[in-house]
Length: 193
Image: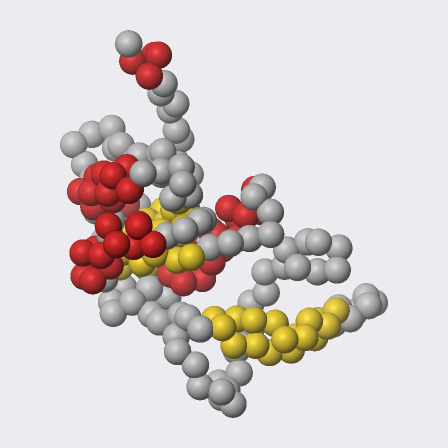
């Protein structure tokens, strides 16, 4: 966060040698100096960063979501994961905004096989910037390890219109396309009755 409360996303080379050896995902820190011609330099001391392990292989489609364990029961998370695995998602990053102990225990099989990673996530505010920062974090973690990354919530399900999976549809997209926007349709229990 800058002195005015804006969230900054920086892309820079992390120093290759650290004085303190840490585990992957454990925070380290460095000092950052940002100089823009004609502007007052910004100095960020002891800025924490994490180096994340890469996936063992490039995944064709990774699903990324945020869960508030106090709102979504574990059964809903399990159903959501099972459905989207059928749709061709081979790996999921589930950001947990709250106590994730029960969710980790319930997802232990997925975690052990490496198809689900639960990320403990907190952010100073719960507005749009909270979710936007989570999406940037997920994109960073997948930047060299996934062909496609799908960002969507626990109450959202991808449903292709034909007898295809999401991965089937993506495999038809030309290689020079960098992203897609998926239109949504809202349903309610009252509309279904």
